Amino acid sequence: MLKEREVTIRPANLSDSKAIIVVLQESGFFPDIHKKSLTNTEARISKHLSRCETDESHLILVAENQNGEVLGYIGVHWLQYIMASDTRGYVSELFVRQSARGRGIGRRLLEVIKEKAIERGCSRIMVLNVPNRISYSRRFFLKLGWKERQEITNCILPLDSKT
Image (cartoon, rainbow, N blue to C red):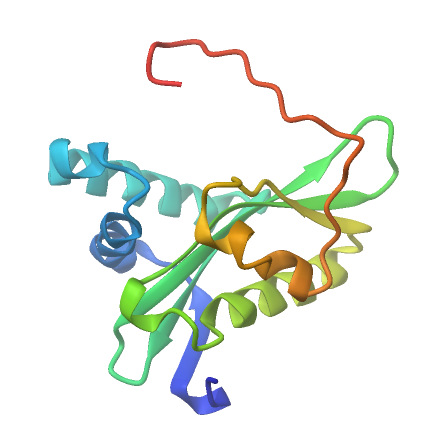
């Protein structure tokens, strides 16, 4: 398990774009990331990180070791619904480099997001987890106290041939 001083959790900045690409490439979930131009991918990530600096509706945090190497990141969106009086957090991305998995980095990233959600007055944090991913088979979120909702189905309307 991870010692508190071994990893720092901080807001991502523009200089983290290339490191986030490495995390995504190592995840193995996005085969297209190897096919696409790294310049375009980095520009897309940089644009998103820039938006995070000016718009408080979402946040990207990175976990870095003592050498400044990014080991993982998390993205959260703060959602307000017309039907609810509170804000809710939606974790859209949580990835840790293969070499750093099993050391508590994902847990730490989620803990910081939980703290941020409490500061914002959120009533809950949500995440979609895919059954064929290791986090689901290892019951990662359930072990951390998250509850799987049986009454909700995630439906999508594909708007292009890629989804």
